Image (cartoon, rainbow over all chains, first blue to last red; front, side, top):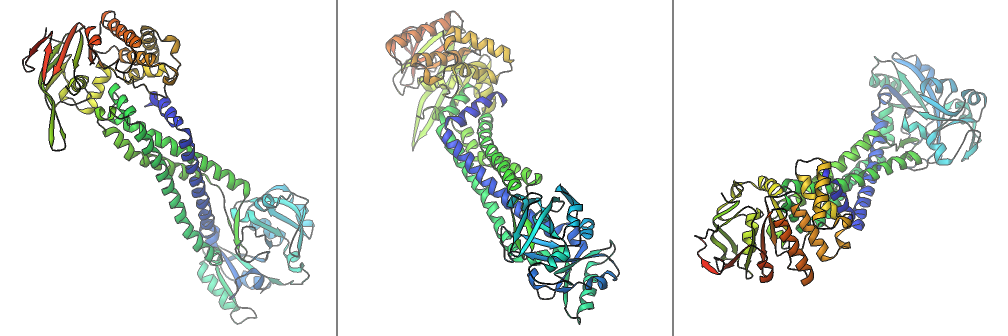
Length: 380
Length: 236
């Protein structure tokens, strides 16, 4: 087949407008497919990572938006005494938009000491000591920094909250790249109110042998008759519940991904059928010269494969560049779903392009291989 | 044994409810090195016979033995391999691949044969020299005249040194001057390269260039002006 490579490439280039349109269509469809895939992966990462199962979130009962949950901070002391609990992180959460938004800014106020221990952050710029020393200092995720074009030393304001960027970090958890970490007491006192002693949620870290459901039930029972009742869920379940509406939408959108694959299939198949119908006589000439019917079939398959793979690669590379450069995310009620490029998504996209290219070429390839030489030579 | 033996070959095909039989029990032999012209009116079956000998059409019955191979018994794949090694086909309308240069068109039959790139290069150059088109090697068919295209077609047909070269109305779409050049070239292919040539033509002048002239008329083969039953014809 290799000696025929120039023929295959030149045949595609012969109808360059058609080829370019097909490749472009394939690229766009694969770009959308990869984008949808990254959204789904972002959602899965929220609900299925290990931390999501071994960490509990204590929230005020029957409250959903972070602004409406107000738990006494000293609940942390009580919870930390329960068996199976290794660490309790009081956390104040503030977001500029409780509804689903592509540009939500979510502040999480945590004590600097606990932030360092409980989050796997790598500082890309700035330093911890500067953050620790300054009250209104903030460490901001690289996605937020990219989106808002912020650098260390900048001051920025969202709503009533003004902070100074003392570091930009990259987190091991993609969703955290969209967060802004501040000191807990700063976030409790900012915006002209004094909510010292009140937090939005408590993050409870469990020992390896602890049963999350049992500990969660014990926490809720403990505060059931207290000043503020609680609802305790695993972090994964908490995040899934919080973004349930979005998850439903994302679940629906994945059909759009399959539609993109179908679109590529029909696009490449149509172009290949047209190419074969244009060249019935040419394929007959090749067979007259001694190309086997299976050889003609392979030539057609090679053309459809090339169309699909070139388009697919452009789409996949485009989506990876787009996702990594924009740092897009969607947030609802303080929980962020990050859209991140990934190698397995890229490989999946390329594999789909390969399979689609092969499938799209089967019918026209078979038609070309089965044509009667003499009849085909008589065609105009 | 003759190079080509066509024994009692019949070709039928259906046209609606009617069965057309362009060849009915035709027998013919061609010797190695012969230059045979096959003439006849439209629909007389001359192109059908040529296509059967070239292995691009299948006989309804009978056998066609070329260089000791009964090609009527070969599968489609094996027949394609056999064509690559044994047949040089010159079309009426040259049928060059438009996206390939003259060089690449001539090289095409060779890529199907077990051959090194260096050997392919050498053979293509010899074939292009034979048709006096070395200077046009990098030209595409659209950049050449009809006569030049047909000469590339001839180079493509002879490049693999086939057992037999078949030509289906090779001058049918050319002007008189170019026709003369092409016929001269075909004579040289036969005489200087010693290739066996079977040419279908409706042009009596073109047919006269051949050493043997055969006509197909209403199911009969006529040679040297004598009508002979197609079932019994054997030519030396």
